[in-house]
Length: 323
Ligand code: SAM
Ligand code: SF4
Image 1 (cartoon, rainbow, N blue to C red):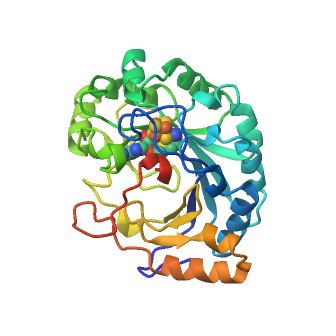
Image 2: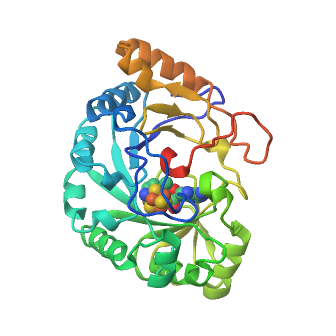
C-alpha cells in the first residue's frame, strides 16, 4: 500500500527470533542479551496469519531475519508456508550462514530464492574477534553452497574500525571473481552499534577505489533494498553501499518490520509501531488487524532521525529488530 508520504510499502522483514549463535561486536553484548520469553514470541500460525493480512495490503516480498533465523527450529518449513501465501512473490533470508551450512539445498526447496550472508571478515582471526567466536570457514561453506545451488547471493559487510579495515578490499574482491553482490552497510548507532567504531561510507569507498580503480555507477536491480551499486573495472558482480547516515534513503523506503515478539515496526529507528501480538491474542478479527495495519502504515515516519533529539528513538538491540 501507499503510506502517508507517498511511498509504496511492499516489503516485510520478519524477525523469527532475537537469539543468535554469534555475538557480533556491533550488534549484541558479549554476554548475550535478556532474551524474549518463548511465550511472547509469535508462533508460526500467528506469523502466517499476519503474512496473509499483509499480502492483502500488497506486501509482496518477505525477508526472514533475526537474531539468527536459522536458530529458530522449523524456520525452513515456515519459509515454504510463507512462499505458498497468495500474493507473496519472493522470500529471502538474511543469515550469518553458519547454521545454513549443509541446509542451503533445503532452503532453496523451501522457496527461498535469495540469501544475504553476513560476512565481516575473511581472515579467520578477525572474523572470530568480530563475531566473538565464529568460524569463518563455516560461513564460507554456506556461501559456496548457495552459489552452487544457483541462488542469488549478497554478502553483507559492516566496516568496523579496529576490526576489519584490512579485510574490506578482500571481501569486495569476492564480487570480482563471482557474479554476486557485496554490500557495505554503514554501522548504525543502535544497541551495541552505538559503542562500535563507524567507518563512514566515504572512507570505505576511498579504500576500495584505491584497490580497484574508479568504479562506474551500476543501475542494475539487485533486490528491493536501499543499496547504491557500483561496478569496479573487471568485476563480474557489483559492490553496493547502504549508508543510512551518509546517504539517507528514507524517501524511497519500501519496508516495514515484524519483530519476533509481534510488534510491527514502521521505521528501524523509531519505536512507533503496532502491537500485533496483543491484537492476535486478544482475538481480533482479520478485518480489524488489516485496518489497524493500514492506519499504522499511513503514519510511517518520514525519516529515521538518527541525529535528532526525538523521544521515540529505538532502544532495542539490532538482533531484536532484525536489521
Ligand atoms: N543474524 C543474521 C545476520 O547477521 O545476517 C540476521 C540478523 S542481523 C541483525 C541483520 C543484518 O544487520 C546483518 O547483516 C548485520 O550485519 C546488520 N547489523 C546488525 N547490527 C548493525 C548495526 N548496528 N549497524 C548496521 N548493521 C547492523
Ligand atoms: Fe547475530 Fe546477526 Fe547480530 Fe551478528 S549481526 S550478532 S550474526 S544477529
